[in-house]
Image (cartoon, rainbow, N blue to C red; front, side):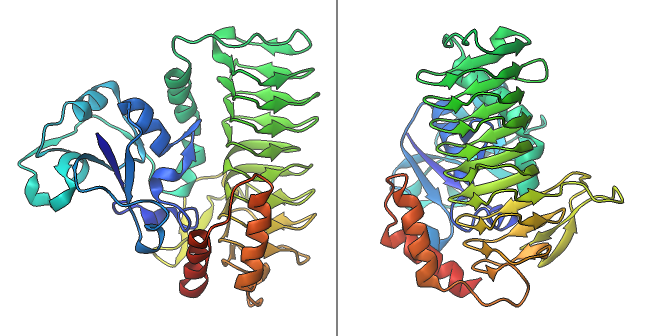
Length: 386
């Protein structure tokens, strides 16, 4: 059965993280939303309904009977069972919005749906970037059960110190953890395949260190934190989500933040996550084109793909960075740094598109991932339209 992931009304709400991906490809917990649904529904046939400029990379649905789903929520057992039991022409509705439907994508329209069932129980829905770190503990707990149930963890090396319940620690094949401390009293800890926790790290769950990623020497990691695949993290972090293929390898603090892919935070980059007056934090909202109150006292940095910082970069509380920004000027940059900013300050010239693509190509080549013409076209569209 083909899964069709719809951005629905949420794509613009998650900018800048969704400039380069559909909503379903964001990460929270241990998995992306699309990976989670593939495991829950036992299928690898997926497609996307997303923005036109992304559709060439994230393939359109085949014209066959499919399960249409808005992906950015965690289902209860009951709702998951209802989704699995959907028949052709049936749909589930949550808060007056279509949640899931069994339809034929050859002629997809709401007219196909003959029966709509309202979901009355409360679902954990992700509606804005800050939800990715705010709900990350619940997502880690959900994915821990999904990925480890019925499986056996590797043994933790005796060189380490450990506090908590051993059932709340899972170490995948090929992972290395030596001379560090791990505490699961505050949450589960998951160490992915071929990941590495270098000597002297202190881990306080809930934490997910995904496949091929590393905690560098002496890192201090507070939950709820997710480090996506092929990333390196050092220094001190607290309640962050890194989608993958990004590095914060050196000292410096990052808290209550979301970082996209192919980002690099230079040595001693720091981000404030709490205002001096303890007021709630405002973040730039791309839909309303203004700063909006998050209602959160703790909120740090939201950074789109391919952005970079120089050493000693200092971010104010509640900073949003677009795609492919290169931030290197002295002083605190503004709370909104536009995509392709060259320097990071308001009014700076743009990072030339060809140079930005050249940097992206070199960064991706280090992970043996090609920078394709499709990737170039996506960056070009963002450059010209945003």
